[in-house]
Amino acid sequence: MSLIVQKFGGTSMGSIERIKQVAGRVIKEKNEGNDVVVVVSAMSGETNRLLDLAVKMGGKQDDMETDLIISSGEQISSGLLSLALKNEGYDAVPMLGHQVRITTDESYGKARISSIDSENIRRMLKSGKIVVIAGFQGIDSNGFITTLGRGGSDTTAVAVAAAVKADRCDIYTDVDGVYTADPNIVQDARRLDVVYFDEMIEMSSLGAKVLQIRSVEFAMKYGVNLFVKSTFVDGNGTQIKFIGEEESMEELQVSSVACDKDEAKISIRGIPDRPGIAAKIFSKISSANIVVDMIIQNISIEGHTDLTFTVSKKDLKKALEITEELAKELDAKEVLSDDKIAKVSVIGVGMRNHYGTASTMFDVLAKENINIMMISTSEIKISCVIDAKYAELAARILHDAFNLGRQN
Ligand code: ASP
Ligand code: MG
Image 1 (cartoon, rainbow, N blue to C red):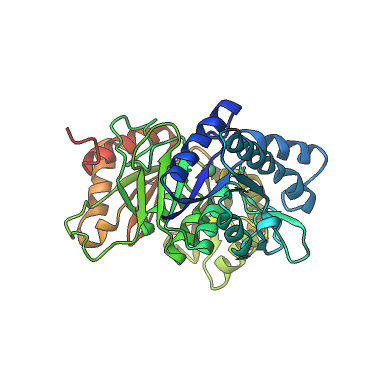
Image 2 (image 1 turned 60 degrees about the vertical axis):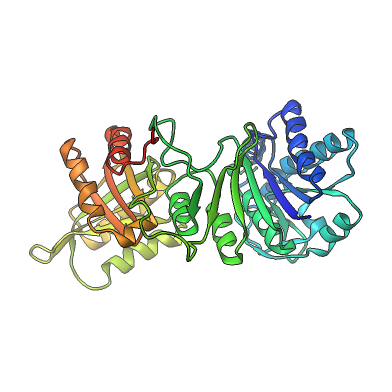
């Protein structure tokens, strides 16, 4: 007998019919003799609808009222799934974050879990019940409801799995695993049987929507045995795991290609090149809660330099206002911005053991006459910022060049 945590996303919970289908997946695990804890998301579109209501009433993302409002979608889902299980003759119990006792800090809208009391869950399991937990929500030390950031039910599931020491945590979604590239862009994209934690963190931070990045970090920290599976088709899905001793060093150089159109770039031209300027610019930007991704600074000419950086598109307006004000203060020449950019990346732990990944990537882009505007690298990732109109083409030719397509 194993203890399994299953998590079902918004699409899987999207209608009464689908919730019945989800109940079937839960029952299957239970019938195999396992203890089952389920974590559910709100029905698809529901969180957006609730957020919209809160915003119309003047609520901001970090207001406690907004969290109280948007957390309610998961409450409905857990009740509905519990009912569906009872209809099939199974004993189930719906639980909200505070009933489990998922405690968080007080950052409304993006709270971090500080502890999970596994006692209540264990007691329910002991009495034979299937526990159905509302994802995405917790309470702060004052007892007020918090939410864990968009996509946060993944983190609830992984955190619960860590707390109860589950044998497995299965994240069920509308795709049957993690792919070598977005199958909507790259036709011969392939499902991966295994993705390593380091790779998954890069993929999530590059905008792959399969798993919330925090959930991956959490799983890595606590060694949760994590899978991504499809609610709608049977299969083993993708396992996210640590690189084991047994892993061959012959692994692929690159395991996936990502394409992110969510960023925009800002350049400040002709700023004085002296200590403290970058510190000034980026501290102003970060204090506005804007995350900067890539940064390049040009070589200095006659005591002046150019600085270019990227932010997410939704932050462009605010970041531009701040930059323009600073440019005046610093007597810079001009501020330019461009939101028609894309970031294409190749990711793979195999890069550690291969030479020339970067040069292959640059070659491939050059052959198609695609200009690279910015480059950033990590040990297992290379990203290039290019013109948005070449994003899909770049993803396809890189996928080909690194032999990621379906092997026939
Ligand atoms: N319902 C929340 C959202 O839409 C949490 C989740 O689905 O994971 O972001
Ligand atoms: Mg999700």
